[in-house]
Image (cartoon, rainbow, N blue to C red; front, side, top):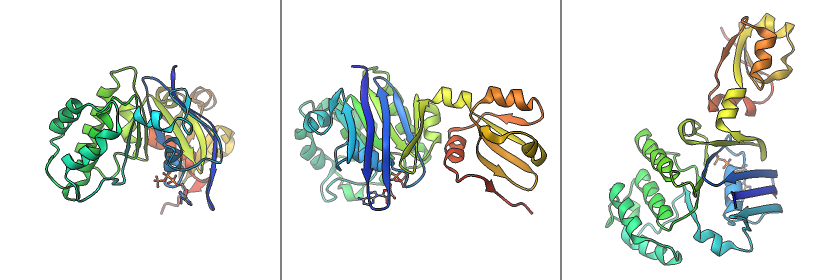
Length: 292
Ligand SMILES: Nc1ncnc2c1ncn2[C@@H]1O[C@H](COP(=O)(O)OP(=O)(O)OP(=O)(O)O)[C@@H](O)[C@H]1O
């Protein structure tokens, strides 16, 4: 079994929003960043993966088996981290851990104690008195203490300061040294993924816009900057999310080789960031920014 997670034609409709035929495949040993603007359907997809809400149609296979009919056995093998607090606020860290740990057959107290020490978790403090970063570390320690093969994280870095964010990313990276684990990580802070993601899946308005390796994505796309005149004399079919001002244009292009062929040295060609790719793909058609 090489696919940790295989989502096929997944659909779900709410009154004002639909997830439309989502397909995602995550292989063993890789980190996939799941990006998209606010309200694009990231949490809905994750809730469906975690079987917290019911799908309308499609299929979700985790570890090669259907996630609805094997809910309990699958949950045993997943570490789930999400940014909303789902602990009993009145309990201490230690008491809360004692409530959660019996649910997992493969709970490993030794690993929990190691993370509690590494993260400097205040074991006797009530959850309500923990900072947001500390709650996230506690959540992560729980998710990592039952030999989970797949980590699913819904915006784990949101609201954390840069230091804690970078610590969290380092931990995730070191986990992946075990080639049998995979991580599915949703975020709208794309810079978190620059360092650690192997694959990027972009969702917008309930539809998957692209899903491929980060290196491929950054290699084949480019940012083109040129004058207004060049825009009118050349075919902008290749352009994704064109941005114009009174002096010129800036666009993301899907085919760097084609841009070089068409424009030669007459435009500025730059490497995009993941943020550029997300912003340009999800921008509403031609976007004019006036300058004064
Ligand atoms: N239970 C629900 N009933 C009705 N609409 C819902 C429900 N859950 C989510 N939605 C809507 O579905 C859309 C997608 O929400 P979702 O939380 O999946 O987005 P997201 O990409 O995770 O956004 P964010 O980055 O802001 O967390 C939103 O418009 C939201 O209002």
